[in-house]
Length: 74
Image (cartoon, rainbow, N blue to C red; front, side, top):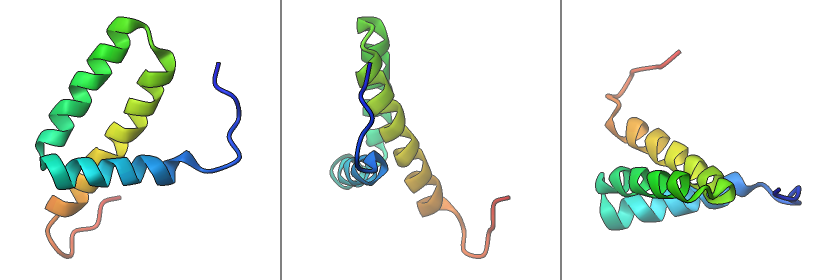
């Protein structure tokens, strides 16, 4: 079980997502999907949790980058 953290890991997950997108482009989502599949297959709950967070940041960044100007999501 993961211990409580004294910092906000979202900051670091966003950094990882940004670097993956910078280095891999939209393929970053494919690699994140593969990592999720691997973590599930291995039964690695902590790894799965980390990759779910990274995937969430990747998806959010991708959606924001592809959203036309003036569009607001509710």
